[in-house]
Image (cartoon, rainbow, N blue to C red; front, side, top):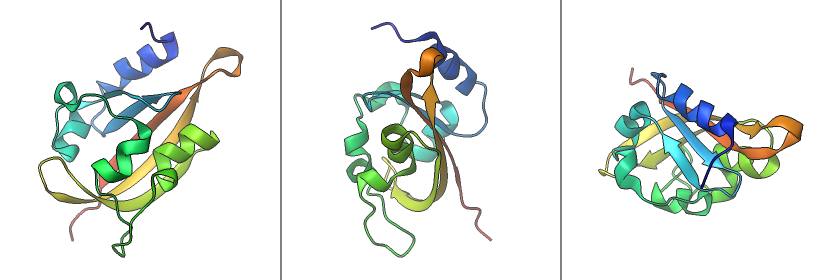
Length: 130
């Protein structure tokens, strides 16, 4: 399937970023994540397979800092995708290789020409260990 030029350009841009970047289409399907994200998530993009927004909380065993479960609809990238507003959160995940990570996540919707909703982008980083 051919993607809108805006998403193609975002994917290209993300490959040059040192910060982890995650890109989803308007249907909530993963389009791409960059090498920096691979390092944090413990999974190469080419090995990830199909990932949908509805699967993120379970896939990464997402919890709040107090250990309580974070529902999918409260994840920043899902808020950006479904409510079309920017969102930020701080949470913990379990990576594909079993490591626990404390992440800050900022996500925003992607709008194309003529106000077409194209998806969402999330950028995230690990909480530094003091």
